[in-house]
Length: 138
Image 1 (cartoon, rainbow, N blue to C red):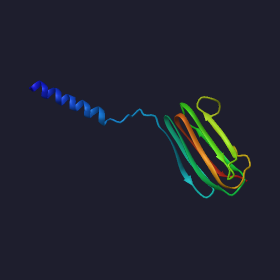
Image 2: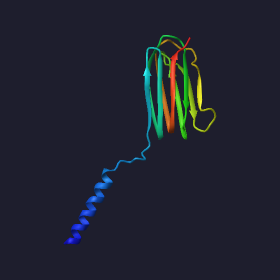
Image 3: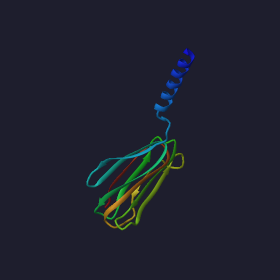
């Protein structure tokens, strides 16, 4: 009888331990828009091997935008900025891949229609961190 009780206690403790643990190694990726003002967008990206995509609508009263993107401590994966003007025309499609070429990109989008632009940030198998920014062009 004592052995059965002891086994039951260990069995219960083991089940409770394993069922309550979160997978701390679960892959994740996150895009956070940290500053959104009338003319500027700033954001951060982080990840430990996960993938995600996040869209944001941005009112650009001009036909271009200045952009900057970088990965500061990425071990793997890619970080893409995709921007469409108010007519749906792609005015920016840039990707930074960890360990391949430059770790940052900056410049001016191609000309597009002013109005509500769509900014899409895609992280694929991203392990590290980085940042991005947009401001109205000339």
